[in-house]
Picture 1: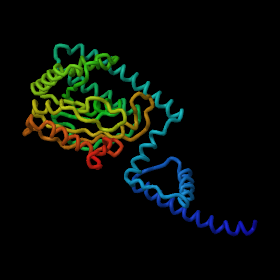
Picture 2: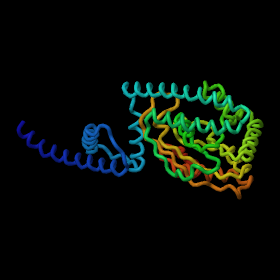
Picture 3: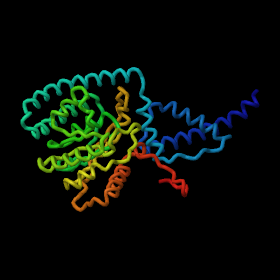
Picture 4: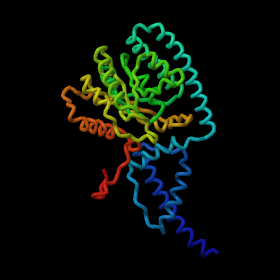
Length: 338
């Protein structure tokens, strides 16, 4: 037994030194990528097990450092499902909707008084959005960083990616006064909010009827030109279920061609981690709203619509984190990724 112990001690010492080095390398990798962990002791213990397992198992391919950091950040918020955090989230959501009911009722009275002045109702709707959206974000408590704010006040067509209910609150809060929105016609059935949307003279389209949708887009272009308005639209046409960017529809490019307004992309990151579709659990993930410089459309022509869509879609892919970019699809013709 003594002989076995003597033999085991040097081996265990070497194993611990090797494991410690692996833990140090892993910690260094996390620090380089801004990753954090809520359980450092478990992480180090995992490193020890991994170190011992590598002695007899073929090493698996390494995950790129940048991708590893992004995945660690995402999992940190997706795993917060404790009953305490869920209960606190539900309380905040209830307070949010109670607050929205109060502000919506107040502004509905204002809108009714302004029935004869349709475009004054648009501006009052924007003021309602600024106040209500800001209140919602304050109640929910997500830290929000705004970048490129110098591009947020000019008259333009504002576009935004859409992956969470939080996007609506952010858009309400941050779009400039004098901005009209375009939404699906079914929005009128959303309790209180939908009715106020219609009272505020914002635009609706019938997505099931392409002819009617095109005519609605033409009316929107005429309205923003004649009344010196801006426009806000989600170019994906719907909300992404997993946070990844979807293909863009052509509507916003048609509006740009008809109005001559520049396009200001708004890149929203982190909202898909904070509030997932179909859930009432709002996690404390940090959010970023980044305004990109305006894209002039003065020299755009109708025969290059697909090129403009690809250009702006690629711009979003460039500025979104890996977890929100479209999945890479392998090209079967040459085996490369596209």
